[in-house]
Length: 341
Image (cartoon, rainbow, N blue to C red):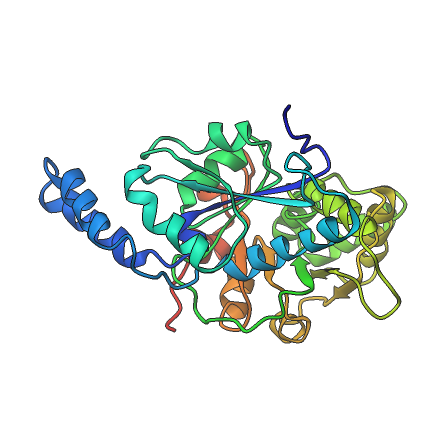
């Protein structure tokens, strides 16, 4: 009998986003460059020697820990069977071979993460397998993999730092997620209008269309599923197991349309910050999310010294993508700029 995951939030994460694997990744790149004919065998031997070594946590670890902790409500309130679907399911998707992935599987057990499903695909394209697992969110450190998933419209996806800037001390008993608005929860038409014609044109359009919902962006369905999950959990006036914040550069008169759009989707976010171009970092540090999703590398770079962040890629057909970026943003938008730890 198959498990029904239709009401389960399914998150796939690469091994390099869950744990810090920069040392082994760097060694593999070195082997491939210097000894391409023998690199695979040498790397397999290298990983076999280290498969019992502990791994430091990666940029996506705080989020995964908090997500998995939500399953305590499922276990506490039900007569659980082995085939019962959890509230949250996490899948490891690794481009390593099964043999070289043993260190990751050992680390999952060492950290006490209840992750039982995994895919080791030996360098094959990731996107088809993400689709096979019916994933709602895919987190990776590989920009090409994220772009393929985004272009296939499979699910929400984001790019994380290969090495965390900090080891974040976050409470994992309450899941806290912050989302940007335009080009993340909402479509990219507002972002594009602002960059092409300026703030006045954007505000004029939003004021005229305040009663019309904004088209869904790449993270809309994830937010809706999180909101549905939130409604299934016990909550009071002062505490909820999930807290969601909208942190956006929008302000009046563009704020009203955003709120009405979320209402149209049946979503009630816990907090909304309409910052009108103010720096987002201060609010994010106070909110202390397990992850912040934004399409702007500038906002990501400013915040990721203090909180876990994830860069949302544009679809390749978007005018905001790649060579189609406006000149003012092009230089800073194409790279995930390293930040010293």
